[in-house]
Image (cartoon, rainbow, N blue to C red; front, side, top):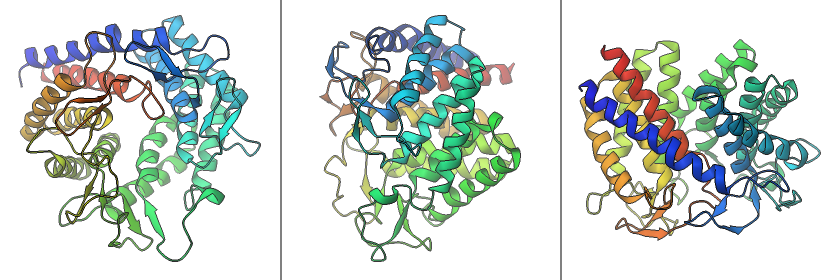
Length: 394
């Protein structure tokens, strides 16, 4: 691929990040009265609900600290990160250090700490903010949270787990997938032996336990002995989850200079994409049943922002690391669909939810599940990845 094309894509993603997406969240999201961020924003940025979802608080605090560290040391970006960090320190967790799922605007608990991903993104936020500012309270907190996450791995929901035990015990793909990225995020703060052990475990689970070696598809749930469960949960595929995990694994493989793992991650990523692509309307399905049965999730055929943006990161990295032409062909195909359907040049930021035909289903810019994370992170990652591709070509 010639440098002019790479440079064009790099510039597009950079400009959209800095001139479209980041200004939207800067303007509408910070709560200057009570701290933290509003994430329930309509198309124009108007707040339509003031509840604060803890994992989205952590994600946004991390994002603005990253921008300050790696793009430009703008004090306003660091300040936005700080108000999220302070809010999490004051209100985010219970007396055991476990992070709630949601809070009122003022910081009063709404939903118990049943979801370990609140903890994962709080750890990311504290770690990044602490490393950027030298705030040892934040870095110490990040290490402490990470330790608690590892202790809860076998039963992440703890007493909030509603599954009846020993009837159909399953393990879920999401936590090892997240840990494969979180561990690298916190690596400067962690003991090197713990880092390597955690990475080894993540590779084993992500590329072994949940991966079908015959189809190269990744399952969302497996039995405790890594088998197939012929049930709604056991047949479930989430192409976006699996593809996102593959760029985490690619980063690990590059870090370890493991060419075999790198090539395997690219192969698995492409398998999910080819299986999950909607050949009739375009875009990637949200959920699928591996046997072709009706999925349990009624939203199975929706097209979601994060699925497509994470796919663009994975394809860009796959191309950078291997120069596999299929990565480039798919990148251009997914890029065209994503920018045509999700990008909002009028009001800023990106739409999150489309129906199967690619029409906007909800025109919100943020809510309970969509915050300041997947869009800016993807724009940043693709921008920087293609910059590196260009450098490597010179």
